Amino acid sequence: MAEIAIKKKRPKNLDLPSIRLPLPGILSILHRISGAVLFLLLPVLLWLFQQSLTSPETYAAAKAVTDGFLVKLILFGLIWLYMHHFCAGIRYLLLDLHKGVDLESARLSSKIVFAVSIALTLVVGVKVVC
Amino acid sequence: MLNRIVVGAGYGLKDWIAQRATALIMAVYTLILLVTLGALSPSSYEAWRAIFANGFMQFMTFLFFISLFYHVWIGMRDIWMDYVKPDGLRLMLEIATIAALVGYAGWAVKILWRL
Image 1 (cartoon, rainbow over the protein chains, first blue to last red):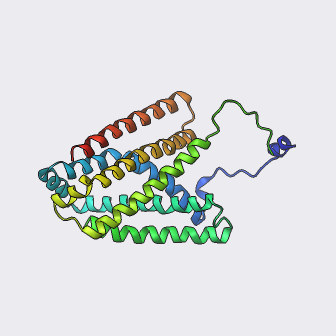
Image 2 (cartoon, rainbow over the protein chains, first blue to last red; image 1 turned 90 degrees about the vertical axis):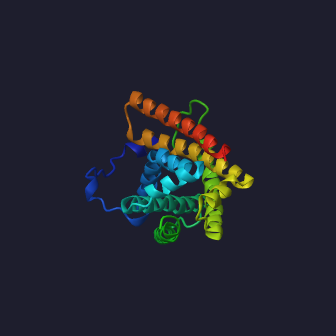
Image 3 (tube, rainbow over the protein chains, first blue to last red; image 1 turned 120 degrees about the horizontal axis):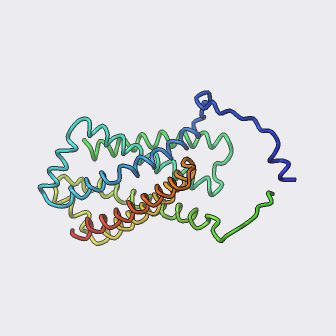
């Protein structure tokens, strides 16, 4: 029975740009992208953390690095990636507990994730970066 | 129900739980750190260092790093499995990921234990 069901022809659309992802889909792919980017930048972040803690001189040097406008902008972006991953992750934990699995609440919760993660980014970013 | 042919002992449940347990630890740590930074507003090297030299924070930060590296391993392995089809290349990327993460764990110990 099951095998017959699987062999049934299913609609296939491999023209990816023609697919408009709904917000929960955008949240999902951003969760993956943010995780991957943060992984790739781990050595840079660990290095910054090390510099900030090693000595007053390296602390000042690290501060000087993060004083540039471009670096500040990048740090803001990274804080947003972290906050998005954090908020979307909490949403997934709730979905695991079968909280908000119907379509309407799933759409609403993805809007909340974007709103809260951007708000947190602004608060934390201004506090830490500026 | 699908008639699956079940072979081997790994069904991914352990990783599934580990991904969520490490996420919870990191989420709690994130909140602790944000509240600490919000309350103390460290603006000098001494104040910044004092936060992480504190025994509790040192323990929590180390726990955060270990959780992070395990969490990253499961996540990155999922990404390699999804997008990299040649077995040899995927294996190489997986080994490189493990090697990097083990190295980072040693690095994190070095950063935290010299405080």
